[in-house]
Length: 88
Figure (cartoon, rainbow, N blue to C red):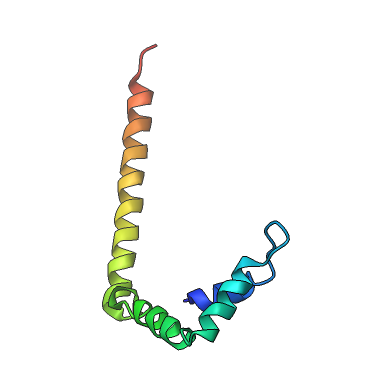
């Protein structure tokens, strides 16, 4: 995942009314020694276990995807059958 710091680096050159606010904020964070703390916090949020690529997580995701596809297919078949019986 992309950290906040990397996103800020990409937007560093963006100008708003002749100023570069992202660059100024980055410089301020670096001067106060907050870069390491920011990177640590971003890293901690990226360690969410529900996004790990384990067999269990992948199986759950694929199961949900297949169930959704099956439900929509059943709904489509039912709607088409209903339309076929319509006597208008």
